[in-house]
Length: 417
Ligand code: EPZ
Image (cartoon, rainbow, N blue to C red; front, side, top):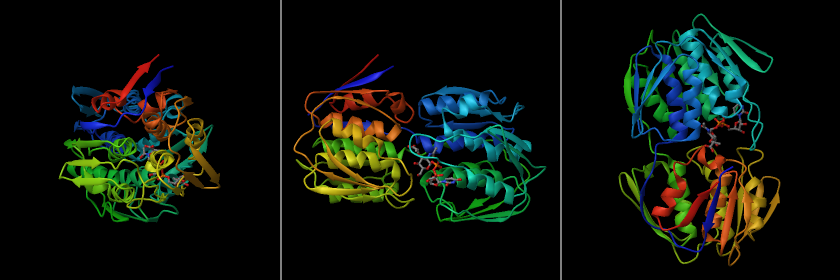
């Protein structure tokens, strides 16, 4: 099982390019199910989750061609098996994103319930509620969601909670429905907007994505299209935090600073100099950061996917800060691993009080989920001595070639079996 070995204490300096967004590419790959004509994608990140989604689509009868350098061609003309089996769904809960497109295009879907994951129960009741409101007959038997509909019909849906993949699933279901669908209390994440842009390029009529109220006017069919996946804002934020914690100076290209306002504001509050360009962002860190409190909320507020990274930078900052997680019920598992490196963290329900210490000491730690892994990497980059991070398959799900990119910035990091 791979591990990452990091010798900390070196500032990150230099320039790297940001990869395509995992959480935009995953729903957009599923959008390929909606048309019998090819969907040509660019800037698809080379991640384990993307490979998993690709295998899932291929076993449904979708042809997927690698076109090199982030290019991918999807051809769903041969779609003949609207099934997402448990052994694939259990490794990646985003598989649930095939549900809406399959019911819309094929009239039927059998998708394994994702089950919980390390960070929470993560139910899909809102996905099911919305599809039922659009006329789908849905039963849950032997751990599978079985959905059927001759043709979905438009309706007005108000989700009980803001859900990113819930909004995406319902948006994809609605594009081929009869009539108009309004999704209120919709997620406003940039990845939802990127999916809407791709659907509209395919001939869908989606408006309001990013506003909290999405309106979809159903059409008879979608045609092929070409779409470039947006840059990964969480990868961008992760490298900014790594440079901030190590007293570095980096420039990230192929980025989109405009969807990182809440994160940038917190890094400036911590004492960093940030320079925005149209498709790049530069960060110059102070000698030592000031501790900053964060509270996770749906976009455009501070993202839950950046919570673990900010807990890590607060571990060595000056002062104390409260990290409040309001989106998931169990997203503090990195805290106990950070304390193994010498961090001072006290947890009370969904608040972690982090008191900055002068330094961390390298140790062996274990990754538990994707963003927890990223926080351990950041801590290892600042800890004195060697930090060994085990189970880094979690990291490989969402970060493309992280050790290579970090080494480009001057880090002493290598992967070991
Ligand atoms: C997406 O997950 C992201 N994944 C997550 O990123 C991200 O953390 C999350 O949105 C929040 O921003 C992808 O886009 C593939 P939610 P999702 O539905 O859609 C509850 C990463 O690190 N809920 O917005 O699964 C749920 O339990 C991953 O890249 C229901 O109760 O998250 C949670 O408490 C981790 N019922 C809250 O809503 C539902 O039907 C928000 O979840 C759906 C969700």
